[in-house]
Length: 255
Image (cartoon, rainbow, N blue to C red):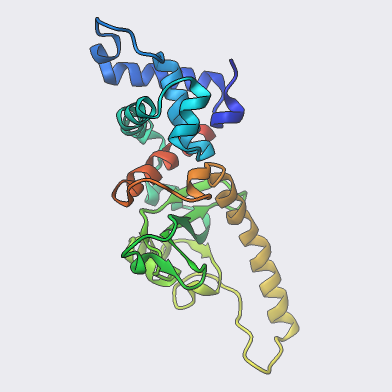
């Protein structure tokens, strides 16, 4: 069966992942006793489908013919293993930025409104979530995804806190007005009651045109709908889930 539309990965990539997972699990994946309801291949596909399509565990159980409790066990067992076996596909940030013009923008991973979630509430987006910084090159190729920070933080604070500001200072990078005060090339802000000069307006058009590439990179990353449609699990596990999806996206892209 083909699973590319469900998981975002082609059959060869899935088979390679299953082999890596089997090596990590070792004898545990082939122990004697009652055979598992799902073979290892379909277990891996199940976990990928949950992240790619953001389906509930109950829905995943219906689609794969197993119970929600079985889905939960498979998710908790294999999701961290997928993070591990794809970690080397994620490039080092300093290496990814080196000798490139880098485009940067922030995006959020919505979590739904939760009790005590005020630090994650974004006034800009009017919802709770964690914020990540995304870097891409001029062609829209993904270069880096930062660790998440509180959703209430603005991009200017986030870029400093995650440690990217110093790295980006050594290269040319382009961003939007939220990054004013950094070394980034940003649009020129129009003052109230005043129009931009033609050369300033032309500069802004160029900057907007360049930034479209990072917006495409974000859109492709958020094809993993767990990052786009609303994360339902424990917030303490979300940073690790974001890392897993980031690793898988770099794996999908062939890094």
